[in-house]
Image 1: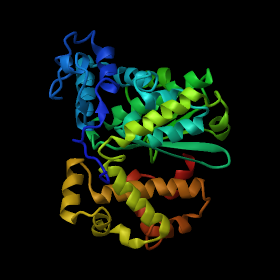
Image 2: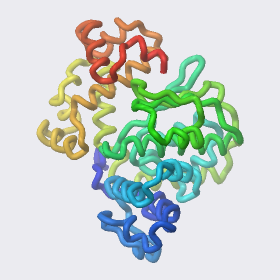
Image 3: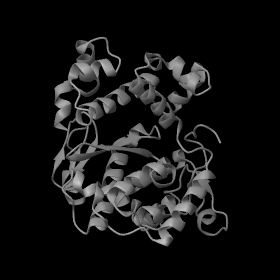
Image 4: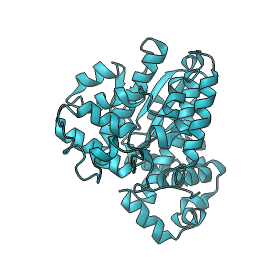
Length: 343
């Protein structure tokens, strides 16, 4: 098995998330011609064959972009999000829907990320009081990034509301300014919203992580085995971006400053620096951008989970001094390190 898959790798069963999208927006486009434009997919192949196509993240991003353009309404991403996890379209979805509690559900979203949330990767940790959840771009779809954040935030909020039987006390943070369609956020996500923050994050009291929804059943165990088998058939179990992020994170956590350099990461991936640059360019990103984002995530983690001082965080993240750390964070997010504690 390869170390990673690319945005062109066949990954997503077309009768899963893609078919749900076609069902949702077919009233706008009965033939699905506009929805499938530039995806290289045909409706007949998806619904009328015993071996429906398996599509790439690039094709899924194109499909979501087509749906957004076709409807031209502010609630499109929110409607997609409501259906994202709440349909039994495969063994991984069945495992998620029958998870015993939120903690195991979040672990399930991480383990089966290519099958459940192929466009964004979920990260989470908890301290003594709260659980912090982060959605990170895994597809390079920067033009649709805000829409994808909306989709995945609503997906998890909707899923948890269904599992808990009520709306948990979320606090949701967005690293962009409040949109004109703020009423859609209130309607589908809630009112504890914070904009122009350093990072997109979801926060929920730790006690909700372990509130039991149900016991593990025999069918749950069977579905989990089936999901593992499906995962093993994929070309890889993480994207190139996720793989690079993991290598950078390992370097930051171990204090190995060699991983501050693209050449060291390329060597760890067993490719040349030029090849890595070319791959990252295709994802509309660069090594420096990924390093900045990983440092930001690690800074939030070290502040909330490890309770480190700003000086200790700066040293841990490979900065020469506090001033360099402050300048870097200010350039990246527009805020000072001390303000990360507000998340």
